[in-house]
Amino acid sequence: MKTAKIFAALGATLLTGCAMDARLQELREMPSFHVGYGDGCLTATEEDKSFSTKKARDAYAFKNDDAYRAGWRQGYLECANRTAKANDGGRILGERRDY
Image (cartoon, rainbow, N blue to C red):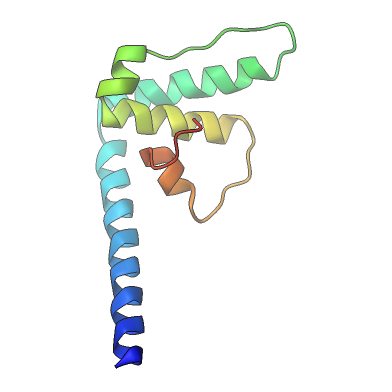
């Protein structure tokens, strides 16, 4: 019985991961993802400059458009030279609020 619960939990976790990957792929195909990616990348590269306070982010789109928000986070993470991790999808899709 305990083994069945473990397998059920593992299966649910794997399906969630697949669904997250499918959702991210769907968002990547939207034009606003690419706009968000550019803004996130610009923000990350500007942060590397000690004298710059420039932040490129459309506040309305970031709040209301999942594709823009995912693109912004993806661009920010990649252009800031952060090390990619297996759980970055959660940060990109917004499950973590630190970006």
